[in-house]
Length: 96
Image (cartoon, rainbow, N blue to C red; front, top):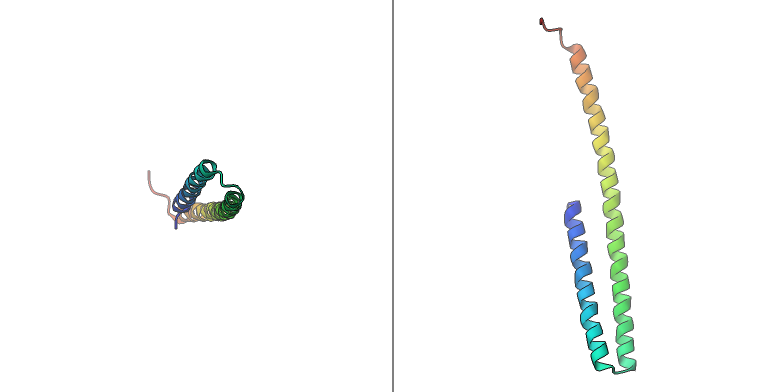
C-alpha cells in the first residue's frame, strides 16, 4: 500500500467518523432525551477517540515508512554515484 493510499484511507475514515458524529449529535440535540442520550454521546466520543488514535498510529507508521524510503533512496543514490566514478576511472581516455 502506497503512502498516498494509506493517507487517503485514513482521511476517508476520519471523514466518515466526523459524519457519524454530526448525525449522532443532530439526533441527540433534536431528541433531548436526557440520560440515554448522554450515554450514547459518551459511547460515540469514546469510539471517535479510539478511531483518532488509530489514525494517528497509521500516520506515524506512514511517516516512519517515508523516512526509511528517503534513507534508502539516499543510500542507493550514493552507491550509484560511486559506481559512476569507478566506471569513469576505468574507461580509457577517448581521443578527442
